[in-house]
Image (cartoon, rainbow over all chains, first blue to last red; front, side, top):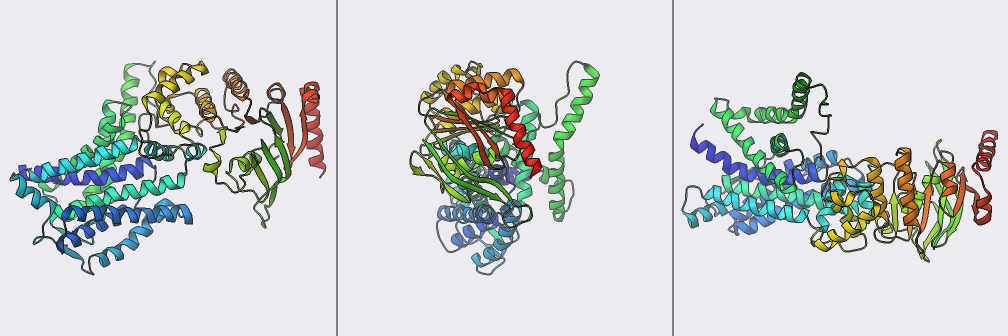
Length: 315
Length: 258
């Protein structure tokens, strides 16, 4: 693997980490698998690309990415709350609808190139004059995103949101409108995803209507890879570390992909490799348990093996 | 004061499974009263509680809380005046959050939830002090996640969370049914301690007849969605478990004859 490939993986990983934070919010905090992501990331990229290409400020473009994608999340939440459609199905419906809407947003073009337009990465590079400008920018934006999410989750509102994912009965008994929390949670989650999409478009200098395929899986992979690694060391992981773990997971995932490519896998096999990585990451819990059981039965009879679910919790 | 007027609840209206879960239930509770509710399965005990807490919408009748008609209030809005403990110890707390975070969520029941700090230093100290009253040592485990607690500790914590902000009504739906006898006794003792407040109405569903008579100030027996016995004061003091079971069996026989 070349140094450039590793640097690229880090730069991309930092962007995908924001996507993973969004997925963490829906999948872990709200305990709802949300497939809107595959569509809303393109919404973010499309909004960012169209605004940058028409000469608007790249920062305004990112703001638009966040807002438009969070609206998509809100629609998914409303389909679930008001029309009682399963969250998984609601997400699929919105993802499908977004395909058409994203094309409209991009003016019926399947892709927009930003080679001639100003982007955040270009202006930051001009200001910093360093080969690592994209890396530094990525770290700055990710830090802001992670810290704001961390502080939000520790507010009164954030507590109510987290508890909604844990136990809806409890939050309603505590005077919280659990539906409102779901709406807020899915909107925020997709907002983060849209922000990642917007950054991605500015980083690669193009936006493509197809770029969303498999993004949910990438987000999940990052969340799970990160968690698995940190859970090897400690059982109770504090919230801030869990959020950081998500970023670590996203970068490791990019590195794994880059490694597979450097081993001679064709780029068309990327999605296959992604699926395999996620399957491996998901099965580590089972493998760790069976490994632990074997080890214990050889060493001592008095220690009971870790129960399923104790060492690998879904929440 | 809680006033229930001619409450009806029908499940599966218009289907073959139609069931009249509550039939013309009227009940007035005065502040300080502690009602124990008994009745066989399907008598409508839990449905009555669910209608009071807003989990189920009623089909007819009104519920007044201190002269305010709350019949149309959504569940979360009623929760500001109503504390609840469920039968399932998993239902009352957010298990992946710490004890103090759970307490903070319950404590902010009637406050605005914005971007303020989720839990302040002052609140932490306050919770710690109040929690020590439970005598379960939970005050030293404030930052531990609730999933590490036993069922009994969780029920005690849920009960504590339910009365933390002085509700007008406390609903206990077989809250000791999943606990071992010693823990159940401990939780029931705490229940008595908390229910012994001047402006709180308490309702407790139980399948244990002696508990139903030993605790509280008033006992009602429900059958087929109706209140068929309502005793308090002297009449209740003279009541024994044997007589109660007799009542119960008569009702069951009647049901069989129907």
